[in-house]
Length: 303
Image 1 (cartoon, rainbow, N blue to C red):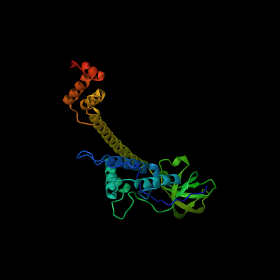
Image 2: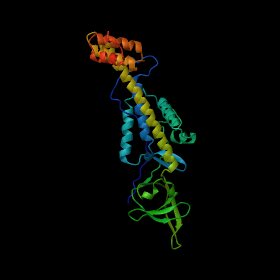
Image 3: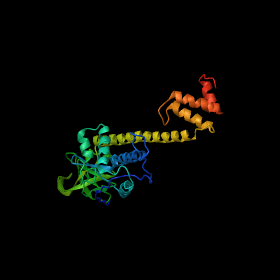
């Protein structure tokens, strides 16, 4: 089996927002809708970037590491799409968002430091990178178990590799998709008592704890994205409410009925029972059967 070397190159992410304009008419104290939309997409990208299959572990540190061309293309697409941000353009602000989401995951400080580089004016990356080539073995078989957790494996062509700390991986028993970094050569004792020298590699697989940490960060990103989605729903409700206010005239009793429901249920506006009933009665007077039924079911006699 021929190994495929990859240099780990990271292009940070963003996502297209299809040219939507900034909402300059947002109420005081409320973020523009575009800002919420961009942050939602950003944390969704974080969820992708922090997924365990895109990370490796080496000598106690974690590194972001796309392992194939498809993943590298996806990361490049995220980088290109980020250029369309119009609100979330400040790198320090994006760093703060990433830091807050990782902290919200509840992982210990030592893990937070492993997953996010300190902010720097000159540092373009948020995640740690390992600028060394690594080897991907898509298929292999165990040849010999050695001491101290090391093993001897063979690829499909029969080439031998000594893999140090082989057992650390969470899926090392699959005999597929092994990720290695060459450390040099090492001699080992064969079953016949002779010594043989082969290329020695470190195992880059995540262990159970590292995988759990990354999954917790992904879950925190997804939770933040869901909260932002609810915030976006609020913008839609506010716009619907504003439209209804414009259309709720004596010539449109159905719109008056819908506006009444907005006040009564707090959709797009704070709840106001008095205004809601006033509009419901107005809609009923102007011929809304829905308003009449609503009032009757609540024991109110139509005007």
